[in-house]
Length: 94
Image 1 (tube, helix red, strand yellow):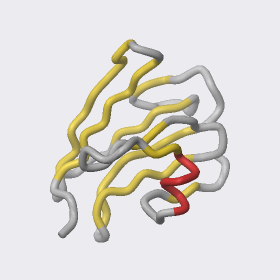
Image 2 (cartoon, rainbow, N blue to C red):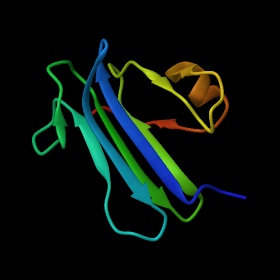
Image 3 (cartoon, one colour):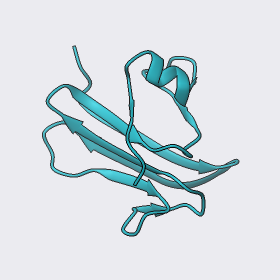
């Protein structure tokens, strides 16, 4: 069974910068990074985009993005482990 929603919290240290809830079937995505038009501009190189596709929730990010993913209350995973498990893909630069 795949997820019906994707809850996203963007933190800088202990400070909550933004939070969003994306629902399966609803249009839209959420992005953060240094690229123009990012929902949350971040002064570091890299871009991350969160959305749903036919397979379920997707996280796509470029080199330079750091962070953790907490999925269904599990132990937080660093981005390299998220890729290894096939839960996210690393997109090409840009």
